[in-house]
Length: 329
Image (cartoon, rainbow, N blue to C red; front, side, top):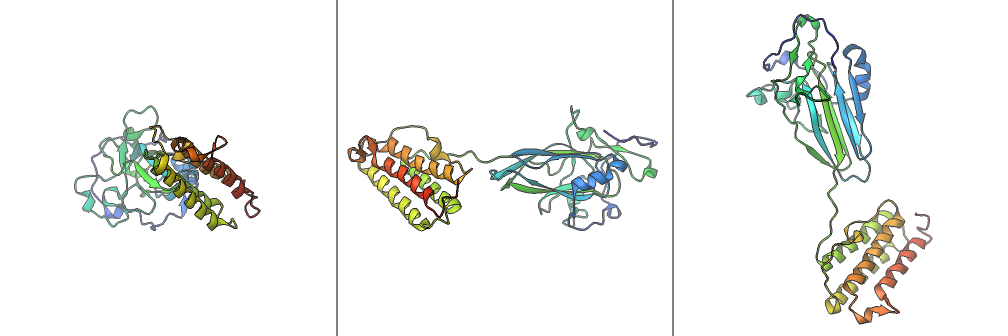
């Protein structure tokens, strides 16, 4: 959507060459959030910003962006996210993207081809601009028409001939990223929609029995390190899990079997929503491994229960009930 402007003509113009005088003389930081800046410029430009910046997925959706913008949006996904992927859905951003523009006025901030209006990620140097999307059911994309400012310039121009630059899908490690946005002082009211989502790699477990066992051992150390590091016998428990794993490994080589089965959930990952659930998953992972790979070892049974199984049940309760960590859920 565009504000109605009384301009003498609406024309599509060819990509413009660089113009040093046209650049915004702004600082290299973004001191203001885009939420605040767009709210302030809504009356003049009709600027609309819709964002969802928490949870496991969201978006940044702007229409009629203002001139002289210099702002940022900090996205912080759920703590369970180990990486976040972004995708440009549609865009109509002023650009001077022409052959050879990379070498024109590229001072590491304005970005050569994107020296007019642009966005970028975190503290990166490469800027993105141009248009994406034609005849969209929602969002103007390349069919947008930028409004010329000041209005005495007496023309608007479309974006159909302005190719996209820097619109690749991006993946950021961790659960947070920063979106930066800046514009010059002419030709405003473009559009941009970016969608983001947690894209954690799917947990997996190795196929080899011993590698599966060692993965569960690594889970035990992770859980002890993260949740039970204040346990009075923290180091002892790390050693106990190590020694027990070596005993299970020796039993496997002596009398174990090797069925071809899909990994159970506790060999793939563990529930880290609470210390108690995480430790329960770890000890269950050891138990299920013993039941699967040591069930042919005669000496491992005691009243129809494998010794390792009894040990894991006892350890699960002992670790969590100690007075140094009994307050943990």
